[in-house]
Length: 126
Image 1 (tube, helix red, strand yellow):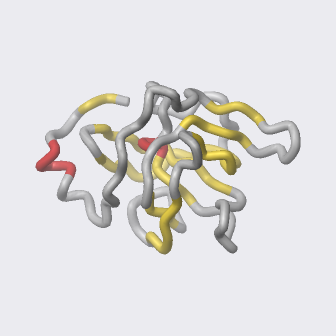
Image 2: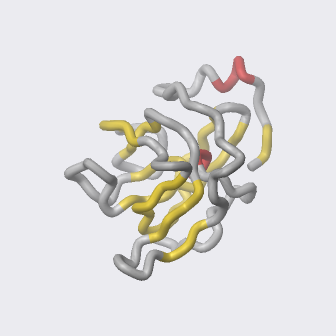
């Protein structure tokens, strides 16, 4: 992911959640789970906002990376660009369902993936 803005500019992103930094032990990339046709992606952060669209609007809940991963990813989609923690990205990942969440098909920014590419690798398009 490309560093493009200062921390001051990042603070202007509406609804940004406080997050923890990624750990060195977090897995990178996304791999398919044989048991449920979902994907597990290396991820970081806590209190990450969940959105109804692939963009910063319509936040309705929060989710955490589980042991440095998102184990519930369904696909990726290009959406609105956001900036957080000095990173900018317009890719979003869609979960189906989120752990401990009764809804499915909602989005989380791909900024929270540990892989270095802007576009999440190893995921199908939505």
